Amino acid sequence: MTQGGKLIYTARTHTTGGRERGLSRSSDGRLDVKLSVPGGPGMGTNPEQLLAAGWSACFESAMVLLARRMKVALPPDLAIDAEVDLNLSDEGDDAGYFLRVRLDVALPGIDGKVAAALLEGAHAACPYSKATRGNVDVALRLI
Image (cartoon, rainbow, N blue to C red; front, side, top):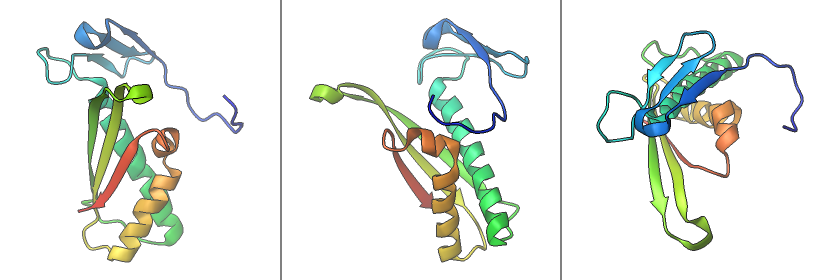
């Protein structure tokens, strides 16, 4: 870790069993989920769903902060549909699993140019976007 700064929060989880029959629990007990393979049998969620939920929530929070700075009132029906694709490549040095992400953002009633600025600004500020920049293809779409 090379970045300094003020620590705001540390999430702690304990996971056993991996994707197939895993369990993941947070240290505070608020998260307690069963894990399963994407598209496979089982009652659990999968890491891609958890990433989609976390990223979209974080992205919305980044939009809220940016909208305050821009003095823009966000609509009460703001919504983000996140899709996380798990892919497999067999191409040379890039062989293996990789992710692609789409964030479809609904900002009803917001001018198109303002909405585009909010999306781009949130993508620049969101910690999930920052953490994956250059490593994950991300498509931002205003719907």
